[in-house]
Length: 321
Figure 1: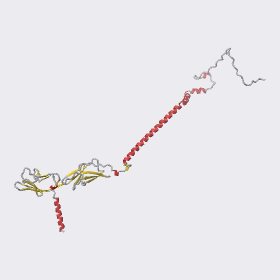
Figure 2: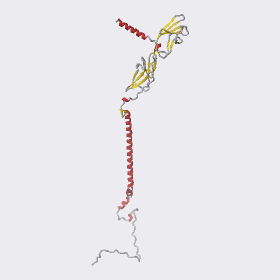
Figure 3: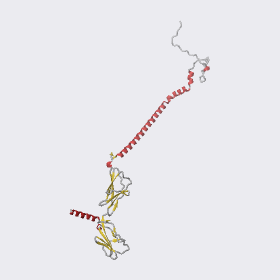
Figure 4: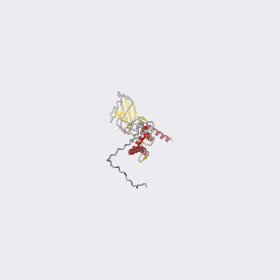
């Protein structure tokens, strides 16, 4: 039992040591300033920096590959590499040799995260956004929509429903570790129709075929109606023309009858005059009646006139006995 407790205490101590090991982070290839936290401008102090118990900077000694410092005496590290990881200790003495400050900073140099690539995949009812971070490990992912952070979304894949999807929305994923941070490009996820889930008819989408057939049927119906109207008008004009031709052919025959009818209707007094008795006197004749011609008086025959021939009788003569 005591052995188990001892091992647990050792692991716990190692865990705390690992947790306290890195107090500052930096990315490979970048610069980092390790500040001691004092205001030393314009003052004369003995300043010394050491890395892994090796002096890297001393104001009173010449050190190899002496790093740069800020005017305040803070250590400036440029073009960091993984071997720059470790504890950095600063020691400051006054002019009398009295210790003023002694501080250790544990620097951890990490590989920077690469710029993520944001892609999306559409399904029937949702859209999946994936933040591809390449070979980066131990990274944090933060999603944002229209520059506003989406709380609770820390996975590399974000799923949203198509009902929430808007055509103006822009999505961005931000990946980071303790040393660096990168953002993806803005993406506006647009989903086209999924051909695998779309009903096809004759190799085309059903709604497109329905629209084509409806349009074609409507056009065909219009053409049929126009054709029927033209045929009816043509038949009507033909019938009218035939009727006119028949009337023109029958006009010479019907004209006397029409004139007689018109004469009969316009002169009714003639029929009345004809129905009157024949023994009327000349004084009773109407003004419209024609005058009766008088018989001519016999003309005297001249002396030298030839005798008038008497027709010969062909039958037998009947002699009186």
